[in-house]
Image (cartoon, rainbow, N blue to C red; front, top):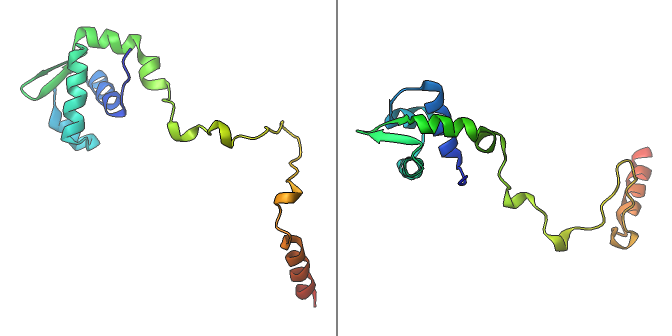
Length: 126
């Protein structure tokens, strides 16, 4: 199954629920899809023979309905791996088990941190 973009998901979901031929301008009105996104998404779905475009009106084909049903988990329920969510290997350290207390490295602590806290407490009590 090819990679499906968010715009293509929106188009497929709308066409599947309406089950009729709709003008592509309606998709722009409802979802504010740009013309570039619209044309590339419809072109890709047309090449897959999932949608049929005639006179600026689009409809799911019979094959398209079966295709959406057959691939619904991959289309609607699977999250794409987001590149910004993964932590690079060189930045990862030892993982802490659940309910294990965290002990910071004493070498990396600011030397004046606890002194400043002690001084703030001392002056606030007077």
